[in-house]
Image (cartoon, rainbow, N blue to C red; front, top):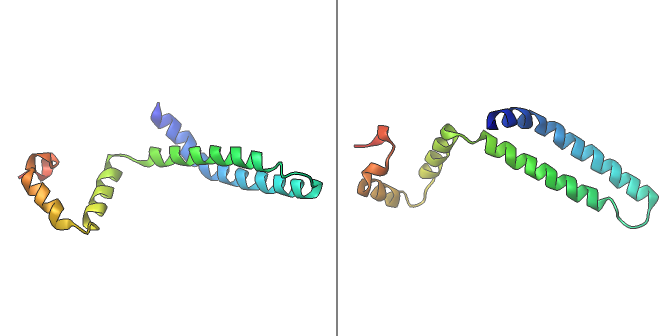
Length: 102
């Protein structure tokens, strides 16, 4: 089920961004032309929240085991306290992935 949702939402994100921009620019222009209070704020806020949720779903859908392993390795290599990490690895060797156990 999650794969079906991901396959539909991830490709739709660029379209969602375009629709967000066009619609909110049009509403902003309409608000400026008609004058009065700034009513275009509320549709902007609601669509921005919807776009944010869509973005988070797309980012979550892109995370898998391979991505997590690559990200962990990146953080490990960029660590300022590399000696501490190596100390923990030597102290707890059974917590390493099966292919890296000693």
